[in-house]
Length: 485
Image 1 (spheres, helix red, strand yellow):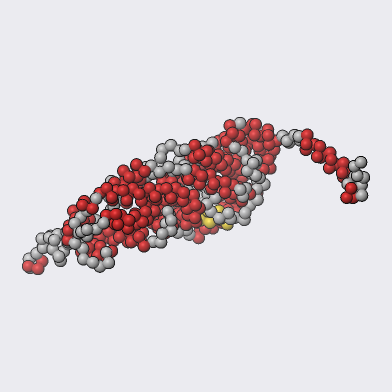
Image 2 (image 1 turned 180 degrees about the vertical axis):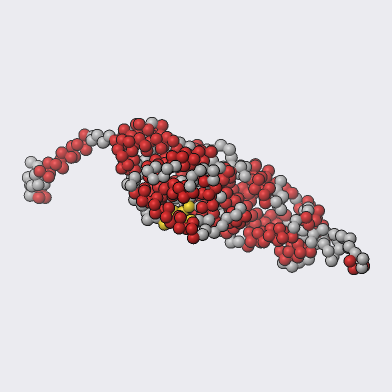
C-alpha cells in the first residue's frame, strides 16, 4: 500500500483536524457567533467534554441558525409569529404535508355548494356566501394563527416571564466559577453580566414558548378535519375549509365512500359558519371566555425551574418533554372555573346545535349520515393526542363536555316550535341557554314557548296609549286641550 494511502491516526487536538474534539466547521461557526474572535482553548476543551463534537455538523449548523434567528428577531412580545409559523410548518412538512391538487380543490368547492343548499332547507340562519377550500395543514396553520395568538397571549405572558426568571436564577446559582475557563474575563462584575443577559433570557423564554405553541398547532393541524372543528371562529366567515389529508385518515376503515364523508363534514362546517355569521355576538363571547380563563392561569414555577435545571440545550425534544404538562398549576382558581364553565357551555351549545342541524340536512341525502354522526361523537368524546398536546401547552381543553344535553335541548325546541324556535335561541345572548338550562331542558323550552305575562305597569301604559289614539284631541294644554283646574 502506498505511504500516502496509510490511515492517519485521529488526534482531537491536531490543529488540522479538530480542536478539543470539535470539528473545524463547528469551531468556525462558534467564531462567527462571537464576532470572529479566537476562542480560548480551555473553552473548546470544555465544550468537547460536554459532547458538542458528537453532534452532526449539519444538525449543529441548523441549531446555530435557529439560535441566531431567535436572538436577531425583533422583540415582538411573548409570542414570536415567525418562530411559531416556522416550527409549525416544518413539523407538519416532516409528517408528509402536501399541496392540494385540482381534484381536491374542486371537491371542496362542490361540497361547500351542496352543503349550503341542504342547510338552506333546514335552518333560518342566513348563509355568509361560502367559498369551499381544500387546505393543506400548513395553510390551516397560517389562516388560524392570528386568532390563536389572541387566545394564548395571556398565557404566553406568564410562561415567558416564568421561563426567563427560571433561567436567570439557574444561571446565577451556577456561579461564574463553575463556567469553563476563559468564558468570562477575570474581574467581571456578575451583577453586570446578569443585567445584560436578563433580557436575552426573557427573549429566549418567549422563543421557547413560541416553539412549544408551534408544535401544539402542528399537532392540531395534523388532526383537525375542517377549519372550525374546534368550535372557535378561526377562519374567515365565508371560507369553508376542508383538510383532505386528515379527512382521508378519518375515513379509513369506515366503509363509507370518501365523497360522502367530505359532504357530511362540509355540512357540519357550513352549519358552524352560518351560526357564527347569524349570531355575531357568539365569536366575541367565546374569545372573552377563553381569555378570561387564560388570564387566570397560574404558572407552576417550581416545575419550570426543575425542568430548566435539567435541560440539555442541544436536545429540543427533551425540552418539550420536560415542559409539556408542567407549565401550569394543577387547580384552576374560582374565576377560572367560572370562565371555564362559560366556555364549555358555549362549546357544547355550538356543537349540539350543529349535531341537530347537520342531521336534518344530511340524513335526507346521505345514506350513512347517522353512522358518520356517531363516529364524530366518539372521536370528540375521546379526545386525540393533539387535543392533549394543546392542553398541556396552553392549559386549556377545548372539549364540549355537555354535548348530548345541548343536542337534546335544541331537538326539544325544534319539536315544540320548529326550526325557527330552535334557531331563535341565538338571536341574543340573553336568549341563549345557560348551564342551568342544560340541567333542566324542559323548563327552558317551556319558558321559550310561553309568552311573558304583562305586568300591571305594562298593562296601564298600553291602556293609556290606546286611549290617546282613540281621542286624538286629548287634553294636552300644548295642543289646545283643557288644563287642570
